[in-house]
Length: 88
Image (cartoon, rainbow, N blue to C red; front, side, top):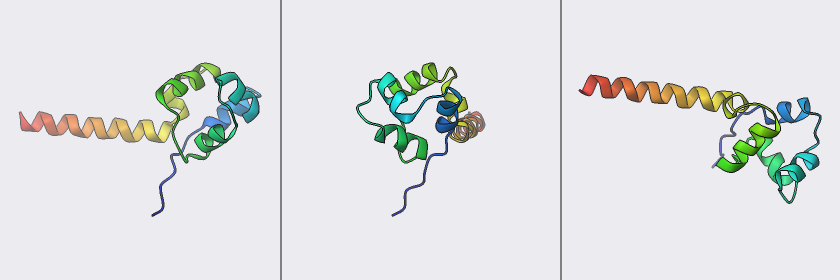
């Protein structure tokens, strides 16, 4: 089974801040760069606390770092809201 990667702009934001993966990992308190790499490649998502840390470190909010995921979730919520409106 092939898992779908989660597109994101984490690498772009890190580079814009002039940070290496090692520097970002150290600032975030992560033991190795492998987690940063996995997040940037979309293999895994950071947990909630690390999403907030990344947003603060990269001086942005979570949704610009994950625009495709944000769009997908927004569309899903709108669709569910419309379905509930029709059910009432």
